[in-house]
Length: 511
Ligand code: HEM
Image (cartoon, rainbow, N blue to C red; front, top):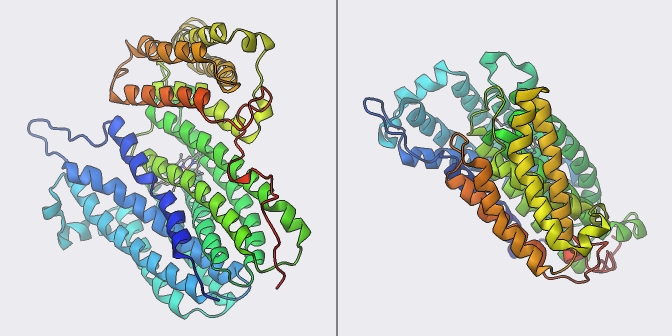
């Protein structure tokens, strides 16, 4: 029965790895990987700037896998699953090692020391003994090791439940650090971030574990899938709520959401979360018919498993992107108060104009409708949209902020205008090949961004041009992506692995 398909498990985990390039790309464009050399001041070495975020990313993923594998293996499975518990133990060891490396790298970062000099027990112990961050690391390290040991001996569901509680505490601990900072006394931020981390781990690690379990053809896979589906739904709600709460506590309103790098990463996370919700919903729909038709089913047939794993692999790819963005967020300083005249960042423009409409269109293609005139004159619509972007990106927020209504309302109106302009642009371009309109949009986009960012402090940098490249790629994809059917009503629908609307899901055998 233990015919586990390693290829599928490897493919699933491979999706999560996309987070590493995403993380490094974001940090690179924000200057987070550049050594700051100033005479007389010690410099944090490049190798530390590079390794610390990667190490935190490994820590977060290892934590997620430990939580998910234990939850599915010891609590959701009909009988405790030794194989998943052993994998969880391995993940917990990786987690503990990542925390250990984090302590050395943190010494190197805080004291601006070369890595060699930071591997020093006295210095590491000072960090652990004297700082909240160090104590959180110590707690996580100890708990991860305890979990790694206990995962081998736990046999019953009650003991499994207690172990899951223990691992949840370990996953929650970094909530006390990050930008919430216990020393600042932000209880809501700390508890909220802790919950955010626990439920993100449950969702991501739980999906990996469910896929591994279902992929193995183990008896009870149907039960696990149904139970995890409920857990995933709860997790998404908690993640969104605590994420937005934390964002609200760190940002000075809508203005810093659209004018700062920190706010831009949050916008990116919201966009990916919308895509993930859409993906989860379509995944569910793809298998729902069979679920309803086979109540009480426990063993999944091979084609059903294949379908589930294919969807799961794509979902994990997007989750990998969120993890990369999350660690980049935790390495980016939250912005100060907003000022009239702050410019909307190039990244926020890309996300508001292209990202959000595309993500919403992915969930419900029918939401993407533009006035009929826009379809009749796509080039004019593209020119109008680009003009609106320039006005919304630069004119509206500064003018309104300086004249009457203040920076927040100015930014809000600017953001709404950007989304509206994007709605028209995305709808028109995705309705069918419209070469002249695409050329207009692709040629005008860099000019518009240059115009908007040209006087902004640090406005035109490598990050700006990286987002321009991303936008150009999205515009080209919108116009030239392969279409199964090109109707105006369903421009964004791409049935992907669900082309048969669930009909590919075949007989599910009863246990
Ligand atoms: C509405 C969407 C979301 C918002 C607004 C949001 C917001 C935040 C904020 C404000 C932080 C704190 C960063 C800091 O310390 O400054 C954070 C951290 C984090 N988020 Fe989210 N988040 C969202 C969705 C997600 C999703 C979908 C996941 C994963 C499934 C996720 C995983 C994480 C992780 C792992 C961290 C901790 C990163 C670290 O410190 O190592 N978030 N998020």
